[in-house]
Image (cartoon, rainbow, N blue to C red; front, side, top):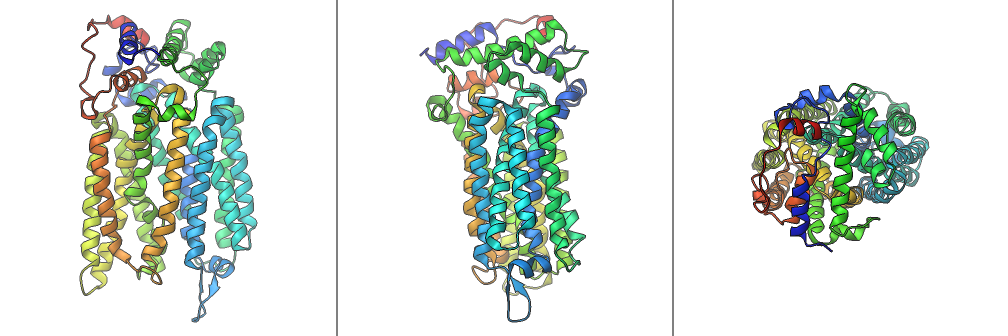
Length: 535
């Protein structure tokens, strides 16, 4: 195996280009994010399609909590209480929350080798088929066990769609647009929450089974989009095709993505050469195909995989499971159904506003500052919640303070999770990207399983009954997360894949990533015309 220092020097000497703004009339450093988007509308469209999985996950993740506020659902799946009402036992709520998270992780794990072998498009199609079958079981279920089985099958498809979508985006998005494109994951998840809430809250007063069955039937739309798009509409990624040696197909894929006005022979050839150079550089390090999961845990790749794991676990550390249980939590804490509905919709609206802020701020501020700033603000909110709930005499003011601070946490999800998912999508080696993403998402949902089991027991009145004191729990996890981000998360803003590879190979310290350069390589000025051609 070549020594990392030699490999890095070789890579720098040939100036491996990335595929970032092909055929641009300006150097990448001078192009704004919106100008990049305008120049590549087809890439934007494909990135939007690739995030159907995150929309599906957001929609499905909130449906259970919403259904638990519907009387017909409780009558069908709950037990009669002494006062004539119906209650779903806490252990069934935990199973319905936790087991689908586990099978989402299984789907994510399967997506890695499946998409590496057969392509990203095939993985989209398979995920759509599995999800559609799971929704059918959920829709027709009349027993708790059958309902759980349907949720678990659907979750396998969701996990495959989520993983494949992030890999797909990372392999087609230009460098300047890549961070925003990967952060669309959080935006579409929040939109999924909002659509589910909008459908459900209009049906809360309906006293028959159509109240919740319409919510489940709506889920068939999204796997249908995956089947249609994966089979007929979107191209395979040029990275995957080049890795398979299908260079003519890779060239056609680039032509589709960049459009007729830019897909001339010279520009597409330079982009294809950049992709080939990146793949050959990784082979130069001794990483011959085919890739394996084991490689993700070796050498510098373990550092990269570790960052991906942290990125995927971050959402749980700042309260994602708590927020997804917000409707049920707020009703159990004493809110009326109408007030709880109003507060949840407000929170989801704030999440979407936070996502729009992320789109503007991410290209300007970068990944690391946004994540640290967002966690700091979230910590303050949970501190306020913990204090308000610890006041000896609880009243309507402390109740509203708890509810408002909880919903304000939604505002920070975009600025934290968006950049974190962007980093998770770009930090791994290109040839290991699908498998590293699979590991990350698998960890995400196994870790989520633990939280989904524990959280309902924490705040349920018949169990832990912590209510707003949950703020103290999440204040602690936020502080732990802040320390991890500070010591482990590098800044990857505007870095090409070759630049990221070089820094990891040279074992550059985390906080030196942004300003580091290899002083062993002569720094020569590249003529502007050449820079325009390769970027």
